[in-house]
Length: 390
Image (cartoon, rainbow, N blue to C red):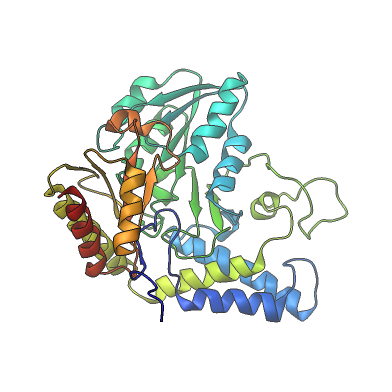
């Protein structure tokens, strides 16, 4: 029998989680094979079942967000669409918007495009060498025309978790809004109850997230929550299955934001993933993933020539690093070829942060740990990097 190579050790969960719980694929297959109907498009049994899946998914997301109103949750096809819906739905011509160097291109590119067309003014505040943003930098950048702060809750390059509650309070004190990109934090860090000290969602006015990362759902799933009173213009207009006799979009938030036929198998898979997490020990899973990342960071830092680019303190389970004399892409290739360790190398769809990390020449190697990773994966990562250096 031919050698199939080393065991696959997947450490790219910050891009998309793998493997998924088997319940995810079972639910998606059942929706595709046995239901096969569009939510909200009929009164026959399967269409009602499809609509129930979508409603249960909204409710599960609302619970995930600490107990917010499910009627304020919409389920777009991914976090990128979610943040674009929020940006284009809330930002007005003439607004000044503050973003950060730790943000993802999912928010930075639409903001940059609006600024290039002179629709808005944009300020990108710096981060430190761990990817953290000082709330005082946001305060210093504030102008009379500032209306929205856009913030990645966790850096997808260093794992740093930002002080979202302080930045939300700062924005609210000045009459502004906080749009929180939680693609890298939902499912990876504890989420407060809606009646916590900062209010729902750490005080943010908008939260956008991905279903396929730490939440373990299928690709093509996302979420967006907006507090009551925010009624954005929809980015996409079209059929919703309701009020079809009107050319105007429905007034209800979720229906207004979900034009078109949703991907029912993907939503069924996301619902199964959320229920799998809730039935287990979400805090324990997050803690174990964090322990794996912390162990990997500590051991890699002890390898001569390796520079670890990861955040201490509150962080998601991401470890970035560079190896002196090697391009990150070459390190990633060696890791897979020699040990089956699959990581991401480069700039990680984050255009600005590398100026502040000192990694502009080639980016970093990024290892990110999910609930199905083990200490053996850390061992394979560290020993292979150490052997490369030798």
